[in-house]
Image (cartoon, rainbow, N blue to C red; front, side, top):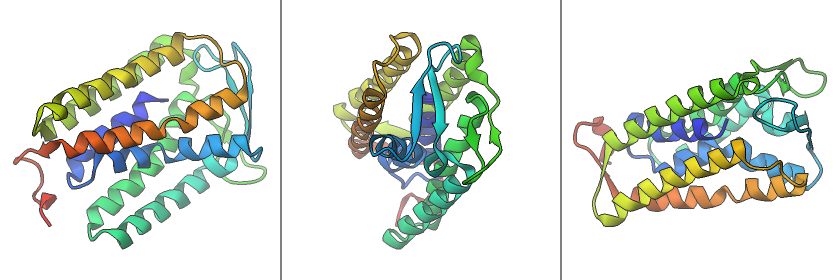
Length: 225
């Protein structure tokens, strides 16, 4: 799951319009921003195994800190609490916390049974959509289109930057996604981790985009204050 996570970030702007798209992207990808750091320091482990699924050539051997259901629930709670302490926007805190948690449930759809529920000797779960390239494209594509549609309906550009910046971000996400699906197998685990860390660029990009867009008048009334 890649653009499906960002789809949730786009769509959540409709529910909590005062939230920046950058904050929403940070929340939905928090788990996948933590994971490459844990890979680089050797706390969690992944192997490159071409053909293990039709879409993803990775065997996620051990990642209970970043990807167990228990961890993600804790991350979501902490994320929401921290935001609530920084901003007086309870709805935003709840939405951000749920966005963090949404990552695990979207991963559940695509992963083979390798997602732990908790630390230690946990059952491993996953519905295995990555075993179907067509199914993966269909599900993530529909999610992404729906998320982008909701974001574009909720906001409009206040200047030219607000127009081309959002469309360039959308296009870049699609290009990365296609490259992940049809590009070569990663050369090594370290390369995967460094590319994962590069996702911070997308977070900053989303903050920049949102500064050049305005929420439509028909969205919920909590846009002021």
